[in-house]
Image (cartoon, rainbow, N blue to C red):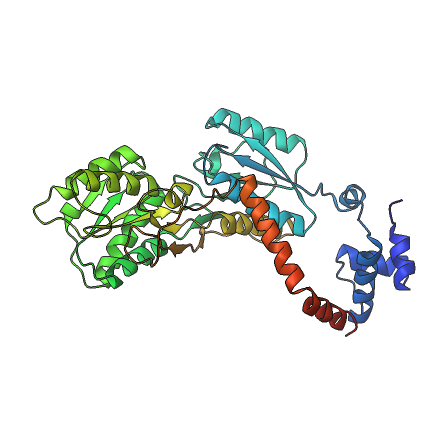
Length: 377
């Protein structure tokens, strides 16, 4: 039998009005000791709020629309996971629509969400360009995350690509490289522009000259990475290291270097960007700047929920930092190479679950002691 607000009030020894204020997060002043009693009682008896009734009272549905451009994108699932992680913390549910790379479908998805009276929308890798192209009638808050083009608009969450490129450059210089090439992405993509800017800033900050022969354009695909690798290997003075703007081009460059008789990393070190699954299973495995997808999704949901509570949006994009993942292609990792498990596989999830259970059992005594101590303070 489900527990009610009255049950919580009785268990905490307070009035129903006081229990309601605490559980609704009301600004009405309540003593801290009373608030803790109500929250502990709710947790102890398993109270679950009636979100429908609560939503009707404050004109909310506690539902957020998530419009994704392409479910097959490797970046979308971890971004959505980050969004869901933040939403559930405040009792919200996410409703996912896929636009399948079709702007018309994307508009229809937004209109369908508006009809369902959702509280806000998060666009994941949206192709909608200026805000004026958003469907009419969208009065709810909205946030863009990981926008592929023109990502400099308001209410946007993006990766800090300049910082990421700088991490790659500093690492290569620390490894002793001075002649470092760059394989860039398409010039009309904001991410590509930020990564080449990070490469050039890194070169200048480190006092290294920028050689136009060492900057080769690409289009994110393996084939252009391979062509760029061939071109760089054929130079009279080839580079000792390559920073590619994404992992697929990094892999293509590695293949080209190997076909030219060069060793990676012995003759040429290679660093990619995004830290895609392929990085852990190639030979050599690819050092890469990790795209902070989960963190970006979490930040997007956090911004949207604050906007739903009346906060202002952000005029300039919020940049989320990634990190450098060191593997074999840069020559810095020590020990024998090994293959990395597929991140989204059921087998890996079971292994992680078992490892977590073992860790909890091994530390259970201490944790239980801390829990009881905290409970009575």
